[in-house]
Length: 503
Ligand SMILES: Cc1cc2nc3c(=O)[nH]c(=O)nc-3n(C[C@H](O)[C@H](O)[C@H](O)COP(=O)(O)OP(=O)(O)OC[C@H]3O[C@@H](n4cnc5c(N)ncnc54)[C@H](O)[C@@H]3O)c2cc1C
Ligand code: FES
Ligand code: FES
Image (cartoon, rainbow, N blue to C red):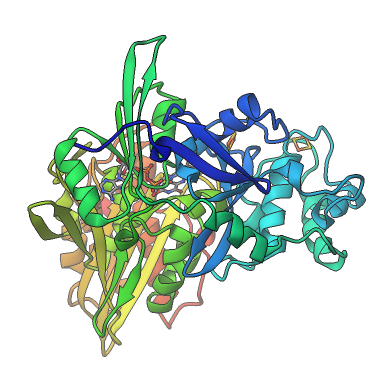
């Protein structure tokens, strides 16, 4: 069993606005946002939705990776307080000195980027992360930087102008002093990992939190506590607590396990650790498959991608997660690990049924192995959702074709949102194999697609819409690669009548 005695290891310690904070045994599923507002009395950070959607709670978190501190915008409402252990948290209160505004704040004032002001601290912190620019993985696109922040008043134009203007304003004395930040983080160094129990008198509940630092320790904990909830970015798990009021009794964070946080490659494959953030996975994935660029930039928004992991997206088993269809189409392999060893399986075999995955209680998702692209391979990923950014897919389609001499030699096609799990479209794949790579060539595959799935109607889309959308995605993919037709945007595709293609 893990030692949970009253030592310094049961204190969550982090740097808040330049000062070390040490909190003894906090409720492990209380949010950083609640703690900031109700305990630290830093009420600049706002609560809008408490589910990662609005960005009003955006803070900047500094984490040391490979000797450098990366500062990223994160939603404090979906971070459990112990997740910032060993890290630096910066809130909007720390940006200005006295009367002197930080350039981000000054630009917001000058450009009239704030009206009621409720969203403003969140926007300021997203812009601040961009202003500091100490993150190689950060997108250069201003709209991408702001897509996770909602404003109901200003209409975004002035905020975008502030984002453009801020870099031209002087910041002497207001930029992050990284040397000092390193020293502060050094002072948080632990001799043993964070692990504690929390007794909640009101409900007579005892919770346990662990943040192991090695894979071996993680696997041993999972063997001891098979019912424990693993937490990576918590962009799903925090919502179970905030919105469904679920009480998590045993929580194991995978965030300090270095073995889960690396991306490696050899001649044939890219291996992405289950704890790698989307933001960090994006570069290596795009280098192999440029199609991931636009596709993953539509998964959540910056704050969600800075926290969320592909491992979490797979492990949650959602039928509408975005990365599984893409990775299934690419023929990815999942690596599962337990204290008794590792096993590997094709990703599609992991998803057994709605909410049911091929994962034993003592196992974790360790990594995902993505084959490298071959020269004859065409790849396209598309999602349809009600909003462009920060929205879960109604339908998500992923296509990987091997083509030579204008003929599709083999195809892997996978969809999300069309069945109880992310699934391959076997009939469609069979119809594509041997077909000409042209709009005419895909007609049988379009027909086959209607038989591959019997989608449901729900709040995101009706069954008929889903069926038509899946066909439209296939048609869009084909028109994109078909040299005989002009490239089109997905939104230009005329609706396809389901009845007509059923004929
Ligand atoms: C505002 C918002 C927008 C979103 N938009 C999208 C979107 O556009 N597309 C999309 O697909 N998703 C979206 N999501 C959902 C979520 O961001 C993703 O599913 C994300 O990938 C989850 O990763 P995580 O690291 O945060 O997982 P967590 O929340 O930490 O965990 C998710 C699940 O995985 C388990 N788990 C985590 N790591 C492991 C592991 N190593 N081994 C075994 N089990 C593990 C957890 O126990 C839990 O069951 C959105 C979420 C929010 C809040
Ligand atoms: S309060 Fe809306 S994202 Fe956190
Ligand atoms: S200024 Fe009012 S919500 Fe943005």
